[in-house]
Figure 1 (cartoon, rainbow, N blue to C red):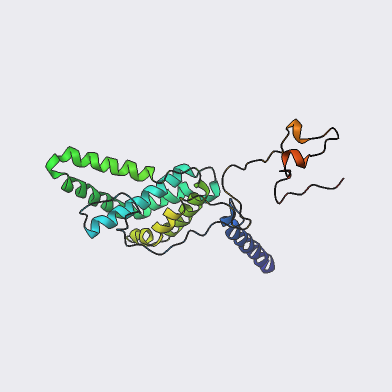
Figure 2: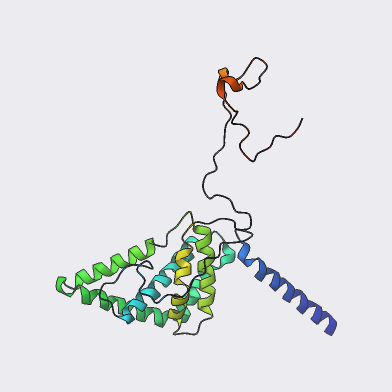
Length: 234
């Protein structure tokens, strides 16, 4: 019985290892490495600018950008269930809800403060615009694979991060997340991203003689087959 339990344990461990090793290969044999250095939060290209923001307000915005990105991933990446973006996002809300709420409250006070002269409604409108633009900045089609994989990885880090430290995840991986919005394909066997164009031979009557042979004197060098493509021998 002890031998059987040991064998079962080894089978479970080996299967778990196989899953862990293949988890990064949902789309490519080798994905693009989007990793980057940590940020401070006040970089101009990380999200919506907040003129006159305090360091606390800047960090709150970074936290909210990360939360929005993971929310977009939960909605946009469900086509690949193994990424677990939905349950991961729900776990983040449960584990880091207080920190996320504090960040939102800080942002709310910022927009009320900077729009004080225009009245409270102006502050709410500015906050709504901030939220809409933040969500839109993470919407992607061409870079969906890279974004979904990166967001899933960040989400896993977040659910294993102690409560009250979600901002540290945002600081450490916001640049990586932004990098993932740039389309990249297979890295093991690189190829151009985009629609492949098929080269066609010239079919002008003047370019061919009665035997179906290309006439260099009339049309120059033949453009077929394309460079790098061979024709099998008969």
